Amino acid sequence: MKINTDGVLLAAVVLHSNPRFVLDIGTGTGVIALMLAQRFPDANVDAVEIDESAANAAVGNFARSSFSERTRAHFSAIEDYVTERKYNLIVSNPPYFVNDLKNPEIRKGIARHTDAQFFESLLSKVSEMMNEGGRFWVILPVKQAELLVQSAAAFNLSLHKQIDICSDERKPVIRQVICLSALKETTERETFYIYESKGVYTDAYRLLLKDFFLAF
Image (cartoon, rainbow, N blue to C red; front, side, top):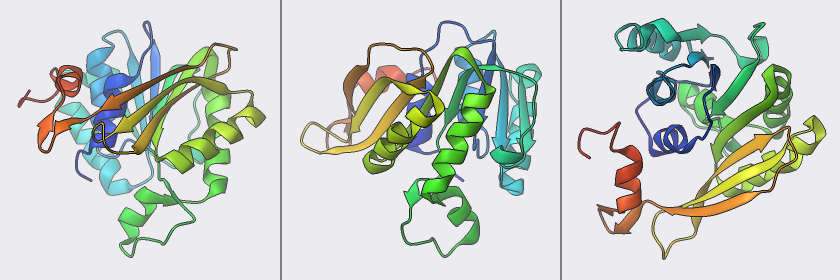
């Protein structure tokens, strides 16, 4: 499970004033959790991962990081994760090929495919674990993001912010970063471009990730 653009974008654009407890659902090898620990120095970050090999890698990555005292990886399906904590901030780069053709590689299939029921289970668990003023940030392709927002109302969550991600100004939206909240707030929308031209990142992309990528 290599570092991917979706994950680093999500971790870099998430906004919160000063979360004390953060949860990363489907952490993989822990990249998003580590970025959030770097961005929020007062936060304790829990990371849940259903794939045992990836969860073990996250444990090792956390232990070798500068944030080892504030990061914990848990090998568990999110449905089975039990905690007394209420989180200020929950993030997820979840499986997203809802009802699409299954990946023949089982481990990749677990990481990338799901069905509509998964989003309802995810929202149920998020609403249970998030505190009253908490935020749930997630990155998804457009049709899955729309499904998530539609399903959120049943769990008293509504759209607070939407960031449309495009490869460049000439391309359609390929991902949406969604922020859901239990508070009734004005919805904010913006568009973010990754490339200025072929192979050339925008200044906004470089600025967003300069604290995480050595190349920037």
